[in-house]
Length: 191
Image: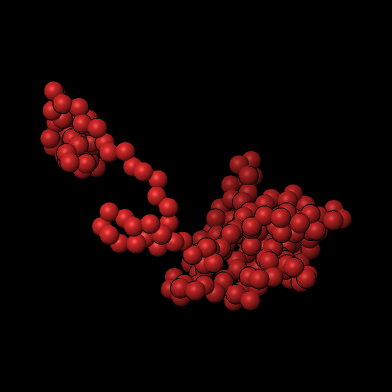
């Protein structure tokens, strides 16, 4: 590990050089950068490209505590439609079983406990415009689920987890992290 100190760095011609102490008599000022706008010419004469925001994916996460209350799904969908979010990873669904609910403007993919209602649950709420890019949804258990999306250059895998809190038993936490590790290892690394 290299430790850089003030004595070991000096600013020369706008570039920091190593091993040369700053001259004691002169104070060198860093050039002040000017804000640039996309599409302007840079100092090498090349035109800077604009960001293509069509390729961006807006993802959020929300621990909803429970979706057993009437109207909770529509409240989450309303927030998603009000913002730019295209996918929301949802924790705390607390339903029974696993599946998919399709609505006009969004779909909900969820993974909850098979035996009990009111225990944990994870899922993804996806806008209709993104749904055509979904390659797969994998409900692992009530704490972990994944969704795989077809991207323009690379495919994307999102892992949604509801981790146990600090006061839970060590065995439960170890089981959770083992499941998470297995889930991560099943994610394809290329394409």
